[in-house]
Each structure stands twice: as structure tokens, then as C-alpha cells.
Image 1 (cartoon, one colour):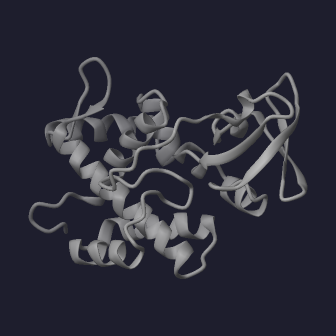
Image 2 (image 1 turned 180 degrees about the horizontal axis):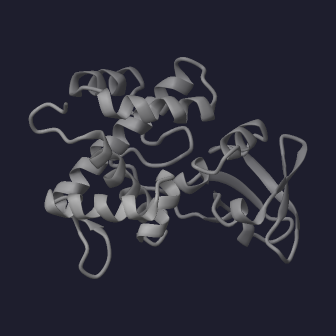
Length: 219
């Protein structure tokens, strides 16, 4: 059972999901929450009612976090992204492995462990995928979707939004293709359907329309 002042992991999962959908400019509606958490629409509807009763969300005019819900979400997201950074930078896990494991750590990490992890990592500003760590005072640079670039335009990868982290196989593909924050490349081809080809580290890589519309780059 959660300790006094803490919330059930299910409440944390939902608040985290709502926060991340809003962060990625995805409509925060029950259908999107159900897709992200892989649960049924009736289950989402019931949980949203419980979250509203707990004072964590409001539903008038759309699903939104209250101040209390936002505080909870930011704490969970912060721990998740710190854990991802620790698991990749210190333990050498892959992006996909770290994302999966961090989903467990975020619910059990204490304040003391969070502070120690942040100290050991040197107070990082982002997770390995470039998403801001809440509380780090990180100001994200202006960026644009990869798929919006012109052929021949150079870019530096800035951020892989959470929406792509939850797409099966995507993290493995992006990591193995060196489509990672800080890596630079050039867009070499583009199709009307949004599919693009990029050259990074001397390799030509095809990126589908779904990903190219979401990968954020600095041009």
C-alpha cells in the first residue's frame, strides 16, 4: 500500500500519461489514454472518475491535471527520466530496456534515491531521448519536425517525444539508426506520404511518416 501522502501506482500512471500527452500536444481524451496505457475505454472512464474524486484531474472542458495532479505527474516523470538516464549512462542498457525498467523504478524511488541519482548524474536536463526532466529548469531550444525539412537540409536531432517511446520497436530502431539527440545529419529524400530518408554517420536510413512527423530536430 502507498505510504501516507503518496498515491497508488495506478493514479501515478494516469497522471503521468495525461502529463506526457499534453507535453507532446496530443489531445488528452479517453481514447488516447486508453491507447497509451493499453487498457479499455471503460477502465479509463472509471479511473478518470476516481482521479477527479481525488482532486487530481478536472474534466469540465476536457481532461486536465489539477495543481495536485500536476505535482504528482511531474514527480513521477522526473523519476522515470532520471532512471532512464542512469540506466543508459551508468549501466549501459539500451533505450528500450531503460524505458521498460524506468517504468518500474518511477513508482518505488524514494526522495533520497532520487536526489542521489541526480547528483551522481550531474543534474541532467533531459532523459536520453531529449525530453525535459521536470525540475531541471531546462529551456528546450526551438525545434521542428524532421518531416518538415527540405531535401538537402541539415539538422541535429533534439528530441524523441514520448509518443514514439511507446511505439513498439521504435526505440530500438532509432537507437540502432543513430537517430539520437545530438546526432547530426541531412535529409536526402522525401515522399509525398511523409516518409523521408536521412543520412547520419554515413548511413542512409528510411524514416516512416509517423516518426518523421514527431522526431524534433534543430535545422
